[in-house]
Each structure stands twice: as C-alpha cells, then as structure tokens.
Length: 244
Length: 355
Image 1 (cartoon, each protein chain N blue to C red):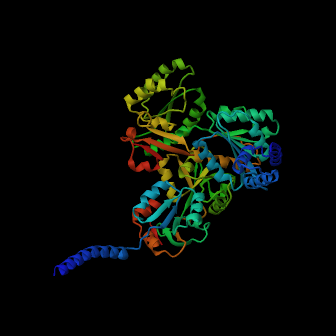
Image 2: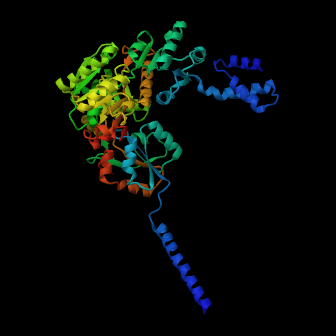
C-alpha cells in the first residue's frame, strides 16, 4: 500500500510537470508562425533618416528584422548578400534588383504614382526649358541610371544633373546657388517647404514616379499580410495612405 | 636575394617596396628558398595585388590622404561613387613622412587624371611636388578637400579646385531654425578678415531665407580680441537683439582664453542660442554651443566624386568656380541647452543629440 501511495504521488508529480510542459508546447505550436529569421528591408530616401525608419517600424514588425538604408548601393549589396524575404522601396528601384516581384503598390488619393516638381528661384523652369539648365535631384539609383530616369521624368535632358544622397542636400544645392533648379517629389516638397523660406517657383515634371512598392522574392504571406495591415500612421510616416 | 627584389621592383614599376613581403616570406619559410620559387611567389602576389591598379580602359584617380577616421569616411564616399568608372588608388601618408618618393612612384605608375589631396599639409607637399615636376604634374587637376581656408590654400595653384571645409552659415542657420520653436530671423556673427568672403556671400543667401545677418568684423591683433569680442557681443545682444549667434571655426577667436573669458560668460548670461561648426563645442559639459552643423565626411566624398565626374564631362578642364561650399552636413544638438527652444517632433532631422 505504501508503495502504491508512493508511486501515485510520483505519478502526480510527473503529471504536474508534464501538464505545464505540454501547455508550453501547445502555445508554441498554436502561436503565429515564428517570424524570426525573416527580413524586411526598406530603402525610401527622403525626409526620414534610415535609423528613424527602423525605430518607427520596429515595434509593429516585431519578430521581423527591419533594416533601412540611405543609399542604393548599400541596399543592393546587402540585399544580394542577405536575401530578405521582402523589400519596401520605389518601383524604379525594384526594376534594378533581380528576383523581386512587386506584390503591393503604395497609393495616395487613389494613385500609385506621385507627381514631381522642378523648383527654382525667380522664374519657374518648365520641362521644355530644361536643356540649358543645371538641375539637382535625389539620386536613388546611381549616377548613370538616375540620369536616364531624370530624362524620362522631364522628357528632356538637362545641361547638367547633380545627384545628392540626402533630401536636405537637395535643398542646400539650390540655397547655395549650385544649381538653377531642383527636382522633388510631392512628398519631399512638403519637407522642403517646412525647412526653407525660399520663394520657390514650381513647374510639374512631365512624368511621375512610383510612391513605393512592397516586393517579395517569394510568396511570403506573413510579411506581406503584416505590410498590408500596417497602421495608417506608419503609412503616413512612409509617405502614402494605403496599399493597392 | 637583394638582387631579385630589386629586379622585381623594377619589373612592377609601381614604386611600392616589396621588401617587407619578401622578409615575411623568408621568415616564414626559414629555410633556403630558391630564387626561382621566390620569384614565383612574388609573381603570384603581384597578380593578386595588380587589381588595385588601373585596368584597361578605366581612368585613374589618385587620392593622397593622411590617416584618420574622418578622412577614411570621406574617401569611402568618394571611392563608392567613382569605383565603377575609375581605377582608384589611395596613398596614405602619415604626419612624420615628409618625403615625396612614394608619391613620385605612385604618380608614375597610376598616371592619374585627377589627384584628390586631403588636408593642408599634404596639399603643401603635393604642390611642392608639382612645382618640381612641371609640366607633367601641373597639368593634372587637383581636388582639395578638408583644407582649412580652402580659398587661400589653393589660391596659388592654377590647376586646383576644392570643397570648403567650413559649413556655410546659411545651411547652419536654416538647419537650426528647422528644430527651434523660437523665432530665428536675426543672427549675430563676429568674424575676422579670413572669413569675410564667407560672411558677405552668406549674408545675401540668408536674406533669401528671411534671415538677417548682423555681423561685426574684428581685427587680427590678438591682444585686442578680448575687448573687441566683448564689445561686439554686447552690441549684438543689446542693440541688435539677435536671436542666435553663428560662430565661425576660427581657432584664434575661439582660443580657450577667449572662450572661457569672454564668449561663455556673456552668452550664458543672455541665453542666446549658439550655432557652431565643431562637435566639441556642443558637449554638454562645456555648456557653450547649442547646435553644431558639421561637414559630413561621407557626403564630402560624394560631393568630391561629383566634381570629378563634372571634370571628366568637361574633358578635364577646370570650371570657373574653384571653391565649392560644403553641401552635405550632419547636426549635433546639445539638448541640455536647447530643451526650452526645440520641438521634440522636429528633432528627427538631427543626427546626434547630447542629453
């Protein structure tokens, strides 16, 4: 009897230990699939520093490694080496990265593209007058590819194109009279207007560029669903209103 | 062995001494190594090393720099931008190395289209070298970066252009206005002769930004500086009622004696924010500068690369504008001093914050 009681107690103790262990296992199995090891990389040159993009998005995308970049060269190199499952960038950038397919298009007021403007001081510079003008632009692709895109944007080739890596440097280009005009997206124009009291004259570029896209290197429902359901304030922070 | 080393160096024509490598090889093998084997090892090493030098069809760019983290960052920016179109060679020269033998050899082996010279010391050394090697060296454009008083430093060189190492005051003030919640529309500047061009030019640029510059020029006599700076500060604070100061990177007027004896007591008393051009002056423990706007080294490298591309597009003819203002900057905020006058929401544009 004593032996029976001893083994019964022992069994109860084992049960007590097994139940929590089983519960932990159940939680692990039923919990959303662990996203550790998944990566979402972002390259959206503009108002925000890469470090701020990472800190803003980090909380919402917990479990997914978020990295933001400030130059195309870094972005491309790291992407090729680390193969993130998803990227958020401009469609024009995705076109230069192999094996990523656009899954979602960012949109504002129903449009997935945003207008670009030529800002100048004194007289406005129309795209048709660009051939004898020196122009500054945010270089998000590298010198040669950016030149091709700029010509597409304007519909004509400027006398000289000065590419900068930071939006604030674009403002400095015109503040310091280093170019006759700067090209900026509608989003970035808002930042420039907040920073500067220069009396800008504006003319709309012939063509728009994409706002942003989410592209994936394979079907990845976890990340794309999280991207799609991103809170509105994060989308506004990144410069758009929603995904299409 | 000495003979084979000499022969190999002659064969390489790069001007780089291979003796240290030979010593390593000999030390590691510790045994008698045949001259033929040594030659093979050196040849393999050369094939590997050859990648840094000009390959067919690429134009060559020589960078002449002192060691240092700041310069490395600038050179990285420059290299990243130019490496697809140029063969880039970096010659690092330490402070105690005043000879030009290595420069001569690099110059001959790389035949650069443009030479980037970092800082004043190497600019002096390189201009001496070009003077001694006319007309070959003087026909090659020089791009000077990180030289203090760039205008004067390259003024005597017909083939030089440069990027100023001083942040334009319009850039600095606009950046500060972007984070400040108080009105920043009248800024006091005290300067010496060497900064006159910068101040005059930027006063006009500031007008377009709706900022008035109230500037006072002081003399070059150091013995008068204490009184001159004190009078100028009092005038600008009381009479002109400036709402910020911009202080140039001038070691003479920012000497520790003047800093502790004049600038700090007067500015602290009146609480006017101070915009400076070096990080050390906004350290909270110093309790002096409010906001620093400093040339961004990587951005300076990118700007230098763009100037090189412009030169190339212009078939290596120098442009009319020789000294270009610094375009890219980073910012440091002394939050302890600025807490009452900055908006936390605007601080996202600030690169570094000292709390």
